Length: 371
Image (cartoon, rainbow, N blue to C red; front, side):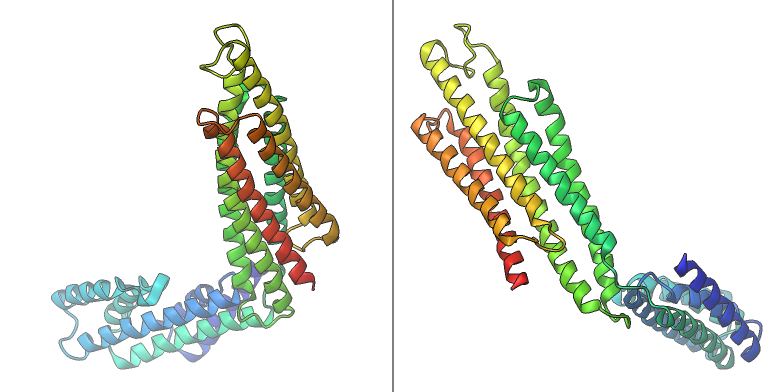
């Protein structure tokens, strides 16, 4: 709402000044450029204004070159438009490059490429840019990060929820048919949410650049922690996708009765198959506890601000590390590291190790920030 009000005020003032100082034929450019200059952040406003003035300089130069030499004709208009569009294809002017042919047409058709008309046109644009930037700088948008930090906290909460549900799935508390259907979709949703959150962080970061309001330095420090958290969650999401796929496969295999009627993995039968099934069941229960400890560590982290109790966070990380060692030892003692068992148990252990490394890194960074 504040941006809308500033836009209306800047356009009105620009039009009044242009009407007072310039001919009526160019006054429309003042409110137009005032609105163009008034973007969501100070940095974006300054950058877009500079690009637009550059596009105007090129467009008016092309129009003046044709107007003062060969005059206004059908063929000169065609050549002018062709050259202006050709120049607009360059990336030098970014999002404002399309304004080159627009300005060239106005200067050539409206004013015949005359220097006097072009001078008034440029003056009108400068008035608009100044009004737009003035409105933005007088009441600059606050470099607050509450919204972005809230998005990161929500993303972290979704990750913890997924970890808890994966733990329930490992322990057999979720129906087998729900494993393969829901988890891949939820992992994709987590990745999409992380991408959206990163976009909001980029906008919040841009709002701290060249912003005259303070304290933007503390806002930048907070946003840097949020960026680290989002990157970590994106990587953890990749690991969880692999864990979910492996757990779904193992649970479906355990739920399939073997030839001897026992609940053994596919391809096994008899007492040996039952023994392996029991060992796999014990391993999965232990692995579920590992995932719960990881979720507790992530919850204790409180990514946007850092942990309020670093000691408690460190204890959760150490507990998760011990759970990992227990699960690894259980897999080794129960011979779940054999070639037939390794594709599942090895996968979940490797991915859990990577998740632990990500959580440990965040914990170390949080402690460094507090010190």
